Image (cartoon, rainbow over the protein chains, first blue to last red):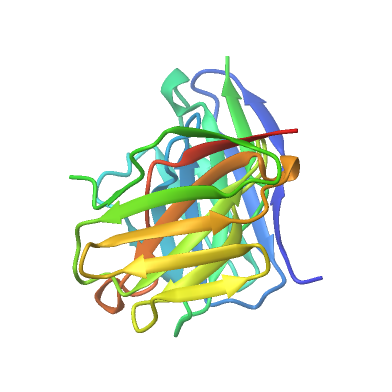
Length: 113
Length: 113
């Protein structure tokens, strides 16, 4: 089945210790997104890629970086995690030309100790 | 300014009855609307969508209604089942926003056996 996969599902890191979350997709979608979700709030878009074209949301902290080495993979790097970065991180994909459904992975729950 | 609002944070319904989840939006440029369902510790799952050229879209037990003049959409689940208990997010997109989705804050649905 075509899908969006996120690894790991649960990640514990120490305050200030860099961490990388990964996402892969078999849907062959051009667009990939990273969201941060806290509690049951609305997912907050951090950045997205149109193919390799990187787009950063204006209020995404510099602490968050991303890489997309190819169509299938995308990484979220948190350079110096703070306690406030503890959240669920969601990866999603969509086609470029619509319809605009985004398909989400299961998420990575990040805990910062 | 929240462009997509779900004013009811929670809803409790008896099994077999109808669940009605509501969503309001303010941006008249939105022309595509989606509902997502989210279980704890999982990513949102796409449920159903509607284009602004329609006022109703049905898929099994799920029906979405769109009232453009009121900038209001609703999701009806009939009959409700305990497995429908989850957080439901509405989201909106517009051709001017490309593939970007604007999410509401979510409504937690509890279906009681």
